[in-house]
Figure 1: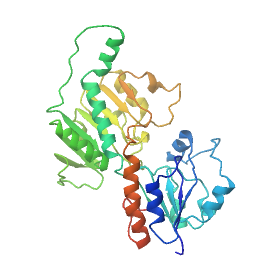
Figure 2: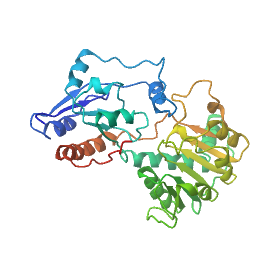
Figure 3: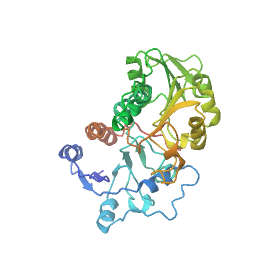
Figure 4: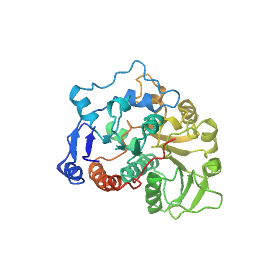
Length: 343
């Protein structure tokens, strides 16, 4: 490689630190800033497994200057990738996603082009885990009710649920799940988890008990709160349906910070409406942004947030540290941190 050209495809201008990481990594290395950000509607459509139908959805403008820069690009850093990368970026060798999820990408196209992919798994794990615990405590300590009472100038005691001694189950013990487990244990909770690679009898120091993914129902029946941090793949689509919610004890809480595709939303609404579930917190939904007429808005005891559980105040700093390590690995021909094995 005579020169390294890195395209930064995010909205905000590269920091001096990021520019230095690229320019100091290789003789003649160049960082080009080519912002490319798709709408939430387009991103959500790309992330659906049934055909990735984006018909009728607008795509961002690709200017002549962007085309010129991309024609020379070896490495792309961003969240969204346009269709036709083989024509737009014929010299592309590696994509560093700035998010953990990669279901929105056409992985088959990456493989055909010979492009490597690494994600940002773990960068926002601590902040997301804090968000999960905040939601759980918000439910158990009745904080929403207190806010309502304050607005209505009511003084009436409502007493909450103690976290100590409760059982929390994590569907998908990855980087986020481990951070959730650490915080739940700090509250003296028992922590159970599933992991796709786990075999019967396997253990993990991060949790009290580890279950194979096939034993999810066995774990659910013991949980006071269930947190899904799973990725989106054919085995997790519509995983949490009426049967799974029925497997959870009456009065339990469900929280999803993984992917909206995990949840059959009509079944979740039924479980909340009947009172079988005490509450649910969703940071992700099947369709994003959530349409104004979607019944989730009015579901009882549902806590919605617009895919914003991550905390961004440390995210850029963590991303810069990851890029510094991964650019060095890329230039050395080594396996990347968080490299995705393409199909």
